[in-house]
Length: 484
Image (cartoon, rainbow, N blue to C red):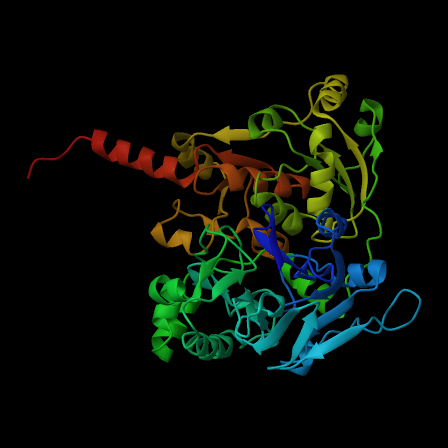
């Protein structure tokens, strides 16, 4: 048996390619939308992907199962559990009008790919339809599972959050019921053999849980001993309280991912091939209608950029920003080094931002900015300047997670997490400029660019909330003390 995890650092997402080397057949679990890389990996190991399976209807990326079915004719295995709101609606929507080869799975259903058997196990809670898959290597002589693909049910050190149907998809009143159902699934999981391996769909940094570990896989026995959520599972009320507490605010785009993955991900075909823009073309872009993503470092961006362009976070924050700041009907122009162009395009199409019409390099941008006098700037405000600016009419906005704000906030600030700004624009505080803070200045910098594009005057709090607290403490320690 061949097993390979394909990990996407930009989404902390894991797909699994499992193949039978005797027959040359393989299956991919939870693929992302740019499926060519899975096909190439399989071919490199003399395998052909003949099937695609999903653990559930994902919220954080667009599934590649439909793309594979259209491109390669694979058989699709998906859940038939859960209620009517969460049934797969695209299985009969081939581009030619036909039906994709598929099998709907109930709890206990089995299927084979080559000499490898898979058993579907209904593990609801994160979502109503969620399945895990036990894996049995019949070709190796085994009759029992060696491990289980747990999807967004069991992670290393955490369980999948049960609140997303409510907080991301808008199904009010479902998070507590989901938490109780998740507890039932967890208590069943605790009865499984310790030696089975656990292959989860996400790692550290994913918003599908609150405390995911950075270790790629685990065992059931280890998780029984050290996973805090599983340790809480035997007491239902304690578990519900534990699992719902401190869950991060979901990115704005999660609701769209859920709907598209349920109803049908638009077919991609090939990766977008954006035009290389000249400096003259770049200065002609209307950034009110075209999203310009400027990937340079913040210090360069704030000293000069195209008015209305967006500065994303790096790493796993890139898609959290862009998915929350840009809608799929907008054209996109990238400012990125050539050697990062393809990977940036791949990241964007994984969340449905496909309309990438142009790109240029930072060096070409520099020429464009020089031709228009240097471009726009964004101020960074030291903590000591905030009180006077507030007295003069500035507004204060904290874009950290709500759970972070429990430690305290800048006096007078309004909290809207940066990934929810587009959904909560009507809640923005009145006043100009809007002084924006996060923990250390990174997320607030990205939020500054989003609100500047929307027409607000903005400034970034230098050093974030931690710098603010340090300044307050320094001021307190330097103030004269009155003797008692």
